[in-house]
Image 1: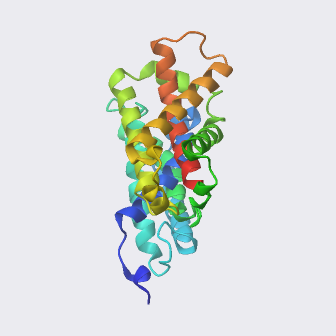
Image 2: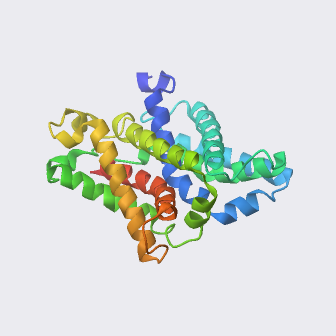
Image 3: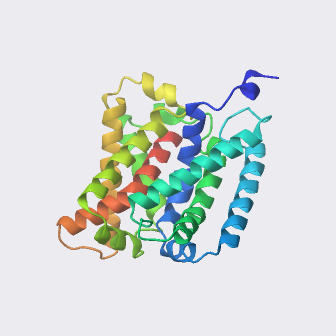
Length: 270
C-alpha cells in the first residue's frame, strides 16, 4: 500500500476540497430560492437531503476525491468533506446574513443543509478542479498580463449567471460595512490559499517565478482588483448602476466574492 493511501488528510488536501466547494457551491448560495425553500424544509426532508448528500460524497470520494492517489480511505474523505462543507455553508450564510439568531432552528438548519449540498459535492471533486499540469502554460502567458487575463476570464465565467439576478442587489442593500469588509478579506484569504497553498498543479512553478507579479500577496491583490472590476462592469452592463457611490461599491463587492473565486480558478488553470 502506498504512502498516499495510508496518510491522513493534510491541510493541502482539505484546501483543495474547500476550493472545489466554494466554486461549485457559492453560485447557489447566492440564490433566493435556496434561502426560501431551505427555510421551509421539514425535519424529515432535511435528514433525507443530508443522507443523500453524504452518500454522493462517499461515491465521489471513492471515484475522485480531494486527495490525489488515496483510494483506500473514501469514508474518511467523505466524513471530512461533508463536515467541513456544512461548516463552510453556515459560515457563508452567516456572513451574508441569510441565517441569523432571529430564525428558528428548523429554518436555519434547512437553509444551511440545502446550501451545503453543492458545496459538499464540489468538496468531493476538489482533486479534479485543476489538472496536474496546471501552471505549465505559465511560460506561454505574457507575464503578469497573461495571469490577469486568465483571472478576468475565470471571473466572467463564474459570475455571468449571477450578475443579472436580484441577489447581488438584495445582499448589498442588507449587508453593513463590517460584513462587506469581511467579504473582501475572506475572498483574499480563500483565493490566496487556492493558488499558493493547495496542492494544485503549477503551484511550485508560480512560487519559483521571478516575475514581480507572482509575489503571492501582490498577485492575490491584483487578481481581486480584476474580479472587482469584472463585477462592476457586469453590473453596469445590466443597468444596476449609473453613478459611482456607496451602493455601487457594495454591489460590486458582493459580486466580486464569487468573481474572485473564478479568477483564482483561471490562474490555477493557466
